[in-house]
Amino acid sequence: MALPTTPTREFITGLPKAELHLHLEGTLEPDLKLRLADRNGIDIGQSTVEDVRATYAFDSLASFLAVYYPAMEVLQTADDFYELADAYLARAAADGVKHVEMFFDPQAHTSRGVPFETVVTGYHRAAAEAPERHGVDAHLILCFLRDMSAESAAETLEASVPFRDRILGVGLDSDERGNPPEKFATVFARARDLGYRLTMHCDIDQAGSIDNIRTVLEQVVVDRVDHGTNVVEDPALVEVLLERGLGLTCCPISNSFVSDDMKATEIVGLLRSGVRVTVNSDDPAYFGGYVADNYLALAEAAGLTCEEVVRLARNSFAASWLGVAQRDAYLAEVDRYVASYGLDAG
Image 1 (tube, rainbow, N blue to C red):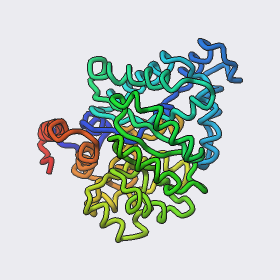
Image 2: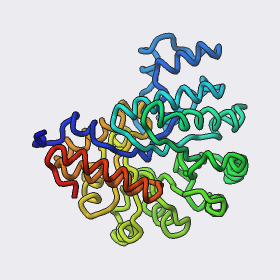
Image 3: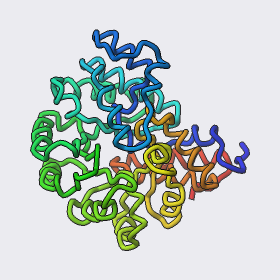
């Protein structure tokens, strides 16, 4: 098979990859939202897919969240959460995803009366069935909402303990303004004691972004950073990423919705400097692009070579929380794929 001169959609889609920055609630496609609203007798004020899609419009993180959280009202039962996750996993498999670590926001549901157990049971059932149904190895990361209190996060963490075997790690998302990572340092220390892996969102171009990244790396001491491309503002922190081999879970298409560009220059600069940059889809139902779309958008914007696209895929497994044997098996799968094009995986 001949190697394409530039990364094509076919090459990118077939390339084995992991997805490490994906919000399950952000995969709520308009047709599924309508179906769940009808099933649960909820009037969402829209009656067609086009009506729903028209509400998926925003130009900042705050305006996105104002649409994002109300949409979750249609998620009521374990079957609803299962159907949402299963639909995403089918779509991810079609994009060449072999391993995924999926965020979910329990407080967005428990705060409206849905039990924690309902949420995790539905999502975990989809994850457990994913290898057989879709050929995808799937795991859950519990995220705390940073615009809620640290006490609420602590309560949510304790609620997770009976389900510890179903949850891989914890993260921190939602509105970063006025909610720095140190607000949750104690909760994350407790999570580490419980055996969870740690990650935190450091959204792009927020007030104090570089200070938040410094806190996440030096005080909280996370295992991975979500978004985080503002790290280029401090070369010493870039060195920390390199020394620790930490991954950055970047989301090019969503960047272009909440900022003035997709941060291709920063992402690719970090990639070429050796940082474990990864490409992910974030909230694809809202931003209009699943993971292969994000790879392709970045490749076209930055003029990436096929070798650099392969490096992104390899980074996705290297930055994952897989065990060594499973990680190496996926990397070998990448090698076989690129070898079929006559390309050295490097």
